[in-house]
Image (tube, rainbow, N blue to C red; front, top):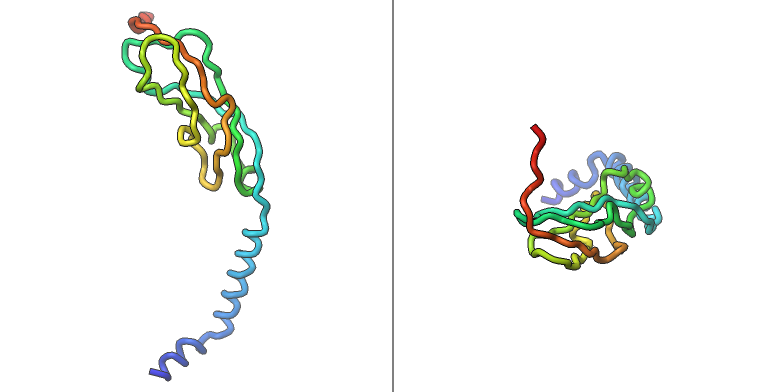
Length: 135
């Protein structure tokens, strides 16, 4: 048993030490990268609007997001990677307020939503049929 453990630990000792040094260096480099917070504009999508209701009035086309993450990751963000999907499945005809929350934001791995402006939107819904399609 001792011979097995000695062979397991001492065989290829140089490679094992090299791997440990490289892994430690990568860990230090990753953890020394600063975490930053920055703002992004993201499109606002209204999803699950009940059948028979139409949105009227002005709905903001985008919202501002405060995003926290590693500097290198946030620099690589593409404009289309962020979007906010406001769930309207519980709304009814008339004017209402839809609150926007971080879970509604599609955000890439490595980022965290820390703020949304505005935190809520006012929408008006009216009963009506779908618009006629052109032939």
